Image (tube, rainbow, N blue to C red; front, side, top):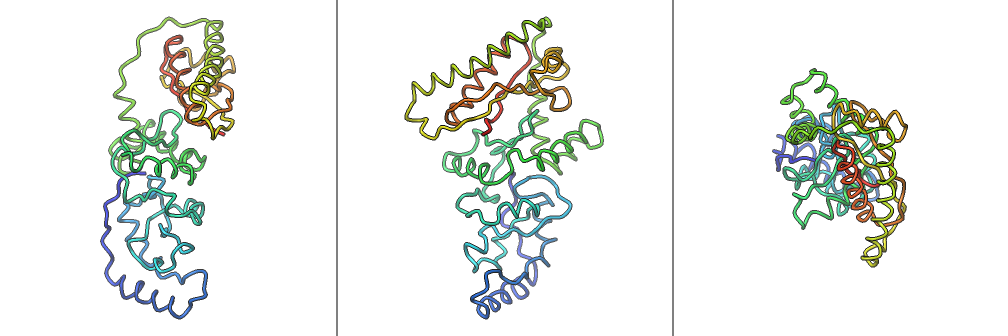
Length: 308
């Protein structure tokens, strides 16, 4: 999710052709569950206001839909209000259709830096920049909509990244089409170059990986013992970490030993097993394991979002 200019200017004739006609239709059809569509005619202007990017996916789409942020199921009286419309990919709009607006962060409230796309996983994540008043609803939005790591969005993110890496698209062009991917590239470019490490043996790689797996289990248990009352929402989480350094021998060794999976380019994912704990504890444990791997093997590893 990215900032969108708000308000978007209401189109000429919207009041006469949509709002007034819509209100008339509502008064004549009080028992109808679905209002008459008078808004699609204004979709091109709504799309223009969102720079033809999906309000929640934050990427350019060839054709979207008019989303009612407060759905017609919740409040039919807002069906014909321009301020209630957001531009959104059709499949994502269908996923959102019955989600209460109270469970979602309004795209018009999003500010710069509140969300980021992580490399190499290409998952969407909430950043520490989000003010405390919006942090919980931002996290709830990721949980309520398939925008964090749904394969349909991951596929689009991979394609935009590939177009840039294959020099089919400039960074400035990418910024217009998929701003969060461009921001992720900027962030990656700003990282210091890693120190040179001697290539570890396969035995050392295996030992480091097994130590990381054991570390996750141990760290999670320590967090549970020390903060048991914060673990009331425990679930079984799948844990993994990502290698984030291009063209490093450790990555190839991990993949060759089949203890990591290639995710494209020069990145790999290592599964660390599962833990029965809260999501917060699972992420902290995986972060600790990533730090251990980085110290041992040289490349930069980072914790992935735990998955159920």
